[in-house]
Length: 81
Length: 81
Image 1: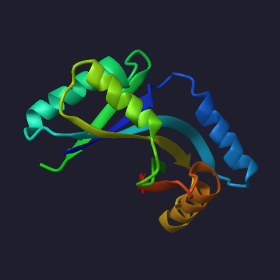
Image 2 (image 1 turned 120 degrees about the horizontal axis):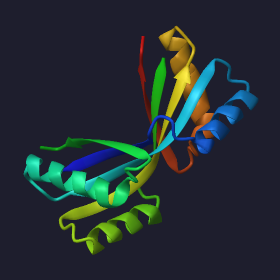
Image 3 (image 1 turned 90 degrees about the vertical axis):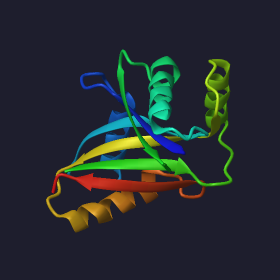
Image 4 (image 1 turned 90 degrees about the horizontal axis):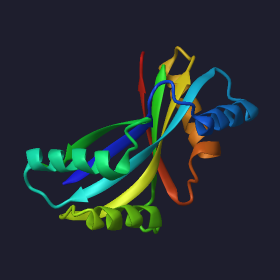
C-alpha cells in the first residue's frame, strides 16, 4: 500500500523559504497572495497488508526520521487497502 | 482561501533523496519499505473569492515558478470557498 506523508512547519516557526516564494510570486505579478508555507511531501510504498500495523509503522517513521517534531507537524494518508 | 499544492517528480526521474530516505529507514530497522519518493508541499493563502480564477492563478503559479514541469508533476486542492 502507499502512504502519502505531509510534513509542515508548526505555526510560529519562521519559514524563509515560504517567504521567498511569496516574494517571487509578487515579483512575477501575482497579486492577492498571502502567507506561503513550504513543507515536504513523501510517498512511501509499504509491503504491509494490515492497515493498523502500517499506521503504527508510519508514526514511528515520522517520529524517528522523517519529521523534526520540535518544529514540524506531520500527517499521512494510506491508500490501497 | 487556502491552496495546498503537491509537487512530485515524474515517474522515471531519479530521486536520490527518496533513495536516501529508504536506506535510512532500512538502517533504522523498518522492514517492508519499498520505493520512497520525496516531493514538495506548498500552502498558499489566496485572497481571491472566486474559485475558477483562483484555480487559473494556481495553474500559472505552478507552471511559472513552483514546479519544473520538465521533471515534475503538480496537483492542488483548494479549500475555503
